[in-house]
Length: 432
Image (tube, rainbow, N blue to C red; front, side):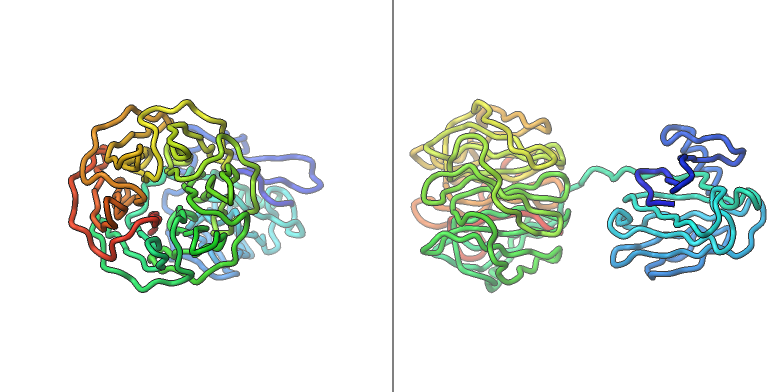
């Protein structure tokens, strides 16, 4: 047998694909029939401790959570079986797409073929139930279905980092929006950089300026620890923006390379930055970006005081310009809120501003909301608490460290007394 694609067993050389029920009927791959089949199958099953090894031996009547985060797993079935014996295997951490499972039928047939064939499953979130039918059919899959991942609920923590007169210090944001004191910086001191989430629970700071334009990056763990410099990929630049897309990936876009740019660089779900993608939309710097809709992103404002936006699809494709809504401005910030919406805030219109513009879960930017808090620009924003946001730091006649919380309804609160070194030209993102 060859590898599994989707929720089907592909039998090499047999020229067929089959999914059999307990009476030999073909089960559908979705709907109430599948749910009922799994319910019946799971009745009386004894669920075991999580399996993390590269090999294991299964026992009839048991259910196994198979954790393949670090390695694939080969599962040996019992050497003898009785009609009706049932075993269930389930993807513990949605990692079978990277490291799958291989089933060794141990001398018995599997779906009518002898154990010289290879049975592999490699779909994230898959649950597989097998039942022994008879000596001819052997073990047959009576259920194999990938469980959909639940929508992202956002990250609990945030981090502000770098900025000012070229520093590398950071300030963590708790899950209730409390900003911590300075953490000694790691990596090259710089300002005018950007940051975004990747991998679902980690973050990355990238690019910037410290007397010369940079393309290096610094990864942030899911515990908020900033790593040392990673050699840059792509065109060095400053005054760019970044956001997440596709649930677990990120994108750096636009900025100033010596002239304004609209190029972008994708970030994989393991934090690897890709080479330049030819720019789309109006080249500009001094903009902001956030995610929306749970898996998409938006770049907005910037340049020589514009209000245009560019949507980012869930596969990281940047769209052409969308006519701007709200007051044109630059040096603003943005963040996510309410799991699937965003907000642009503050900046300069020629004079400092505190107005905001909400972004719907379909990427539509709303008209201006009267500003709350100290008007300022060159600040940063990030998500915290899973569904809330925070704007922090910036410049208002001098560097400040004050913050403004954003509720899960997109309402900006009055100033909170600043913590940490006052600075501008920094970046922020969520993690955890």
